[in-house]
Length: 187
Image (cartoon, rainbow, N blue to C red; front, side, top):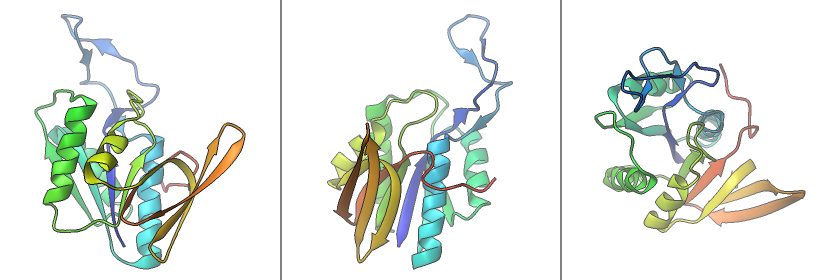
């Protein structure tokens, strides 16, 4: 099972945000950064799947060289390798981000069985990159997954919608977004 987890570098919760002198941007020099809790669960899900089924876990992020810190921390807990699509630090819109991720995924020699995303990023909560990627790659997608197993090339997923639990089965390769609580990531 070859798994790809897409990550985003985000400011740590509880950080004090200061503006730049021109008041047009956030001054990031004193902020701490990490990845969102949803993405931590996606990485742990990838680690568990690779431990159970063999294969590899690759991380992918788009950002400045500063994002190497988040990739290294996730490599240290069990990912096989990491890919940084280096930008010059500017923010990208969801369409541009998804297009860059799709291009990188298509360029990979590894044909990933599963693409995992956090359900939403902790900073903008845009909730659209993973849907755009799945559509562009022509893969089925299940969002907001709180429980998942893989058997015989089928992902069995559960998610909670209001007061109802929905069960879905999708053939691999697929895109799945996970929510906080799917598992307990190591710290």
